[in-house]
Image (cartoon, rainbow, N blue to C red):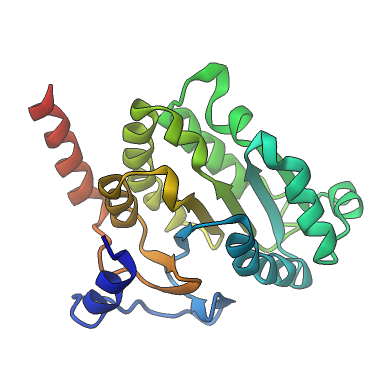
Amino acid sequence: MDITGELFHAKDQAEGSTAKTSAGSIPFAGSELGEWRHVCAFFNSDDEEYNVLLPFIRDGFACGDKAVHIVNQSQRENHLQRLSEAGIEFGQAQRCGQIEVRSNTETYLLDGQFDQDRMLGVFEQMVSGRESEKFPRSRIVCQMDWAAASERHVEELIEFESRVNDLWQRHPDVVICTYRLGKFSGDTVIDIMRTHPMIIIGGILQHNPFYVPSEEFLHEIRERRSLRN
């Protein structure tokens, strides 16, 4: 399946494929983030991922934004090394509260379980508890490969990715959910795409013509689950 080709073909035909850009737009991956700031980003390798993300992360520090990075536990040291090579002083940023690096296990899989409602609360706390607005917004980067280990995790995560759009619409924060293409089936990739209003494919950010509003998508996926059961 050539996802990149389908995306560019559909972009020009999609209804409502352009979103209103606010005065607070943020440059990212060859484009800008405006009204919609929940992004799914598909990559094939670490190098590809960090080539796209590091300029965005550096720009966040220059703007005084807070960085929250949720990474695979096994990749934490590599992540910190990448930040260091990009000129980001992790120790100093951590001491002043400008960066948090969490593991995906302690964040998403508390006690080995993924609980959608708990995670909605976790993200609500991230965006609302900014130390009395010490930082204007948060730039949250989440590595999502943990879900590939369990079919149930994938199913719950897809539903959650749709539900959480309501939260992100109420806040100015940016959320980048990164997925490694080789770890997920084609059907799962399509569902993930349909839950994010913005998408990065081939290193380029664009409005996602496959995005389905939460109410419609959740009705579909719950009906699909009911039929299967």
